[in-house]
Length: 148
Image (tube, rainbow, N blue to C red; front, side, top):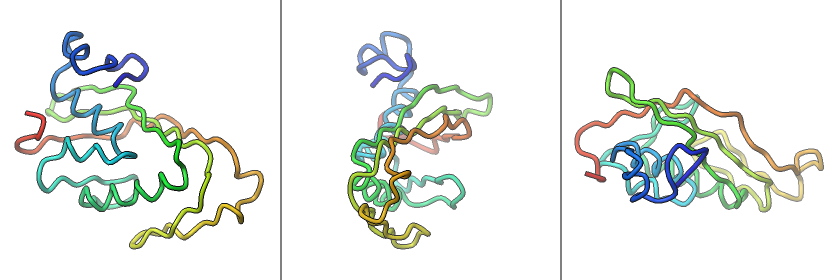
């Protein structure tokens, strides 16, 4: 755990710092997309809507993430802030630290992502990448959460 001071380094320290179970679960979800551990925070039927796309079942989303991590093995998802909204949802600040492409990116079926061969990448694209902080993510808990 731990990013930009938003959540202490481990769950016990986070609870001691006054973080709620929901905040800890959201943090784990946001930072667990690359390694698939986000699913541990999901209730049955959980969907995730990636930017610009309709919501996908969690297994489909994690399948996409898994293929991206093959090409970008240093990819890290940061959770920089969690705010509870008046309507009970949470707004989340996230940032994707992608790193450099180090292997071929396979085509991702059902998406517009084509296969990209590392050998075909122009030199100017062989860089470490960090995307801007995203603040539009909104997380809603519907029904029971697995972390309860």
